[in-house]
Length: 409
Ligand SMILES: Nc1ncnc2c1ncn2[C@@H]1O[C@H](COP(=O)(O)OP(=O)(O)OP(=O)(O)O)[C@@H](O)[C@H]1O
Ligand SMILES: [Mg+2]
Image (cartoon, rainbow, N blue to C red; front, side):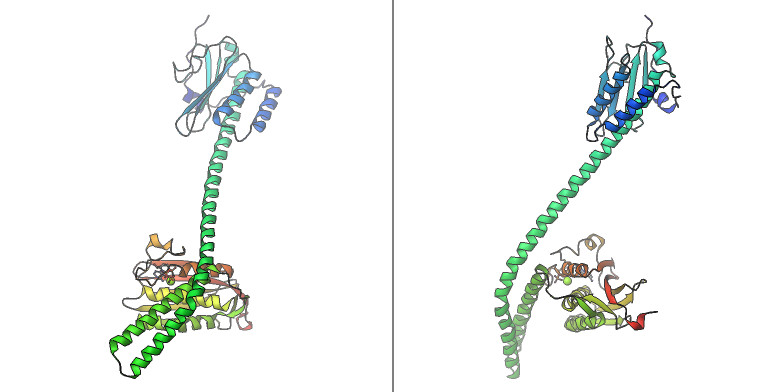
């Protein structure tokens, strides 16, 4: 019996273009086509190799067939289908699955990981490159390689879906927590509202009384602090309620520039405390956006207050600029401050509820979360950019209710 010819180097085979057998049997082609379309997408690499090899072996029972498949985790799957009487001696020579056979054709699956399909035979004619069996091995390798690639993609996609589902679940749990927190807080705030309003009113009354009688300056200062502290609790409580409860106001046309002016008036005490200079550059004042006036006021009060806090130490400039979008469908309001800026690692978190860097008790971290929710509910968009030590810009984009005649071209 003739002894085995050494098997060709697999890498050399992989890179050499092989002629397709002319006498390729149409029955084989049809059968492989059926195999490639019928292989389930959710099989693992071993099952794909087993099914493919069994199918090929049924078409060429006189040959031994095998596959070495490299898995992403570095493991290797080796599967063989032997012809009657053949013995696999896998392991002696890592490049050969059938070292005792006269011929072993090794075809690269070209997956970049070194996976191969092996066909062994002692029959010289079957090993010929132009034989039908050689063509079968070539076609079989293509079917196996594409089934493995499809399965790998499917598994990767499934992994992504699982990650996405867990992320959404976590978000739902968080949303649920916030919603129940909102209900609890609404009840607590309701109870707090009246006593706090009394504290604010009576501390103010007593302060004025002591002042008018030329009383102790330190007592006047204490009374002022009592009123200020009570006002801060009231604001916090109202912010929480606004955040937790959807507004019942019906959206309508809103003269947005008037709203901005009103918000500026609300923030005057903040600006005077921080020596903030305000400048405005408005597009057509008659422009109206569709929205809820109270909520839009809240948006600008929050943005202006943040800007003022960012300029605390040395004061600075707050500029409010409005412009129509090119399509004249939205109004863009740019709120720019010359404050301390926002570090890049913080910028991604500022819209999260309860995220605040204000450790002096001035921040609850709800301001921008509320602003974002209001703007989104108005069909608008909110974005922020910042440069450390230079300042920050918040862009609010709001859909127009209709373009005023004076703005139409
Ligand atoms: N204009 C700005 N300049 C610099 N940092 C800002 C600016 N606006 C927001 N930030 C940062 O984003 C954080 C979150 O802002 P947000 O308005 O949500 O909460 P807050 O101002 O801390 O508290 P409050 O709920 O009272 O508004 C702030 O603590 C601050 O670190
Ligand atoms: Mg704020």
